[in-house]
Every structure is written in structure tokens, then in C-alpha cells.
Amino acid sequence: MAALEGESGRVKVPIDRVAAAAYRVVFGRPGRVLEVAWLPMLVLLAVELLPRLISDYFWPDDTAAAASLPGADIAETVIVMLCLSAFAVRWHHLVLAADRPLPLRRFLAVWARFLGYSLPFYLVMLAVAAGAPVALHALSAAITDHPIAGLSELFTENTADALVAVIALAISLVVARCSLVFPAVVIGQPLGLAGAWRHMRGNTWRFLAATLLVTTPILLLVWLLLDLILEGAHLPLPDPLAPPPTELFLLNGVLTIVLLFLFAALGATVLADFYRRLVLHVRSN
Image (cartoon, rainbow, N blue to C red):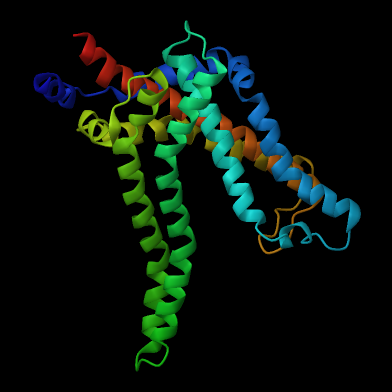
């Protein structure tokens, strides 16, 4: 067993082949993503769009009415986590074990375990997102009376984004190193965090690079198309400090949800390929 684990650590997953395979799986039959994602996608579209549409209908002069609902952001975050994890479970199973159906009871058990591994990472990311601005504000307030307060505030402003980026990168590296637990749970052969960490040795940056390789071109293409649409429709760029017009809000909402599931499918396909090469292939030998 130790030899197998050592061998799995020496496997170098080819980034280009994994990226090409992910594009073939996802875009070779685009309808397959919709077959798996249609229900969670409808739920997220409702969560994303309905509050604003209801607000525009009932309170047309107050576009921020829906945003004032207590706990709205927390509820939306929870629903996004549930929907994306449910989709990820079904997509991983489709990619890794398409010949075996996933009964409802089995799906619920796998989903619960999948969420059990996901929840700590979600909580850490939420804590960073919520705590970093508070900590930086407290730091800025603490140095206001410093003799070189101007330089200190400038330093704080310049390092705020860098600090958050470093923390996010560190979390991403940990999540990537442990990410094999997710396909392992779906396939019914749990690794545990220690086992996933061990099997991903030497390939963490390759996994992140492959994920960036499959998502970055789509982001650039969407940005270009969106810019052409706005220019063709003679619509101004939205003001980040003001609520966008309803037309732009609908376009942005639908596009965001579609991209969310598309990236989830691509990321899960890349991860499934890494799992196949680093775990299943090694075990079969």
C-alpha cells in the first residue's frame, strides 16, 4: 500500500490533456450539462432574479427594497452552496460512473457527505470575505493618530487587496490539495482528507493550472461578447455604485448563473480526471 501511495505521488498529470478532455466532455454534448443542472439552475435563477423583479413591480421607486430583507445574503449563500454541491455530485457520478445509476437514497447519502467536506471550506472563505474588511478597517482606525498616519493609511490601502489575495490563494491551495475527497465520496471509495492530501502530492499546482486553463478563455470570450452586446444596444456601462437597469440586471443574472454551472461542470470534470489518473489508475495497477 505504501508503494502505491508513493507511486501516485510521482505521477505528473498532463495539464493540456486534462483541459482538452474537459472541453470534450462538457462541450461535446452540451445538453448533458443542462440535463443535470436544470433544476438547481432554475432554483438559483429564482433566488437571483425574483427579489429584484418583485421589488421593481411592487416598489418601483426603491430598487434596494429586496436587498434590505434580513438574512437575504446568508440565505442566498446557503442556497448556492446546496445547489452547486448537488450538481457537482451528479456530474462527478456521470463522469466517473455513467454506467451505474445513482438512486435517490444513495444520492442523498453522498450529497450529505459531500457537504460535510465542503462546509468547512465554505465557512473559512466566508469568514475571510467578511472578516478581512473589518480587520483592515480596525487597523486603519488604530493608526489614524500615528505621526505618519498618511503613509500608514496609504500602506493599508495598498496592501488590503494583496492581503485578501494571499489569504484566498492559501485557501485555494489547501482546497486543491484536498479536493480528491469529493470524487472519491461520489464513487463510493472515500479517501479522507489525509489520503486526498497524499494522493495529490506534486499535482496541486497542475490542478489549479488546468482549472484556470479551461475557465479563462470562456471568461475572456464572455467579456468580449458582453462588451459587443452593450455597444450594439447602445447601453452604457453600469455604474458599480448604483443598481443596474432591469435589462442589464436580467442579462447579468442569467449569464452569472449559466457561467456558474458551466465552470462547475468544467472544474468537476478536471477533478474527476485527476482522480482517475492519481487514484483509480494507481489502484488498478
